[in-house]
Length: 273
Image (cartoon, rainbow, N blue to C red; front, side, top):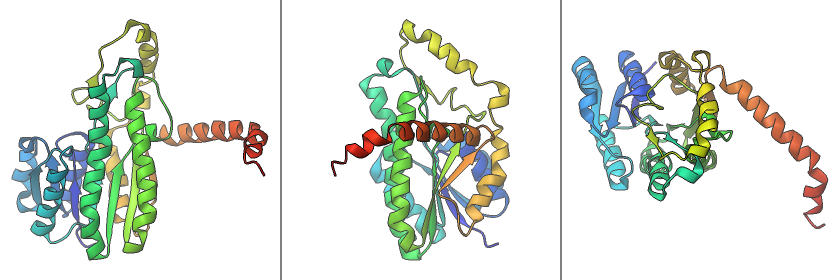
């Protein structure tokens, strides 16, 4: 299979770095963006000219457009954009400050939006492309203590499903990757935690107890799935990652349908005619 040019944001660690290395290892060209590109020096020393490290803060729209322009000019096209940059905000809704809430959306939603806007003209002109948005199982279901993070992922889900309908005619595919919990530092050093209010301590303990070793996936094990997604001629709009994700989504939608069904007469009467 012909090698691809793949732009990955948030490639300094976690899934982004694991995927960047996997693509490089098989012969693809990778544009790896990070706020601190020193974290990419090991990949540069191993893969040389196959990787283009780009310093990028996705919150800055001008930087996003400049990064896409640099990538396109450097490798002569961009086959795949993986919008991976993002982080978790841990805390109850009542605990979050305005700045914490806005910052969460700046990175997880607007950063993804700016990169998407920047790459569409490149892919449209090529007549092909694949935009992969890293969402979450939390893009399907609410969860306490990560409420604002969940809200950001629901925004990404709606934006990307709508985007898919807009760009399909240009030969551009859109996919949402929706992992359950994986053993990255998403809940560690890269996370932001709100100032705690004691009344939420109990629900935080319950939430944290859910993440047993059995429930948390191995990040390295995602590589075959992401490669298969990138190589697919007809990629799915949504790809769940991990064995916890599908059973959880099945239960969530079964519960929703049951409630909607029980209220269907009320809903229909509200139409008025």
